[in-house]
Image (cartoon, rainbow, N blue to C red; front, side, top):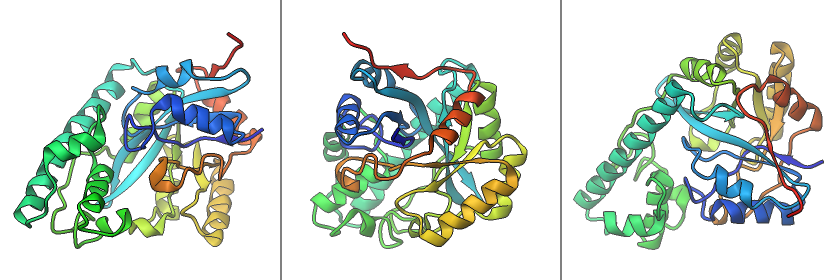
Length: 284
């Protein structure tokens, strides 16, 4: 069984609609796929409708948090999407993301960069604009040669000339909100150093103490030694370990199924979930 528990669609910062993400995952041999768009559940229904026979969809979300002045992402799985407090925080984060995007576009304009709000909306479509969309706009405008270059202090990286801060949850509270909604919380890519930060062993322990259930160790941005260390930390703390592609479509090279989760870890996730159940593809 091939299980990929982290993917994105055009509902957030991926490049393809949820149904196309499901179809690509199936073509790549993925049996179980989690759709985990940033701070939204808007793509779940479309993804579920696209499921082919024998394939499973895990409804999830990547929740934006902040720890020690750095971004931290929490993967939330199989929670009740109608739970009022988590739903309200989800909307607050998304609203502030749009406000931040306008601020970044304004700062880019002050720097003489030809990125407009109208041009950004062409890239985002119906999704809420975020920094990945702005990075793609900078590439299209020829200002930078890659999305990675856009996320540096020269442009929209933390402390950058056009960087604007935004609202994000404290991860301890985020774990509590996910659990209160019947969901399971897993720490996303904690050692993705190319993003400019990492989550320490001590911070993982603090989150485990309040209900964190798992750690995403097998991620394309994790080095071999970091994966091994995360497995050791997880074992010490009684957390399960996941693996996932964190696919965003074109920007990440269409890598669905490149990293996977063991069936045992997947069963542990299901055992801890009380807010929802996975969707199954049936013969129509």
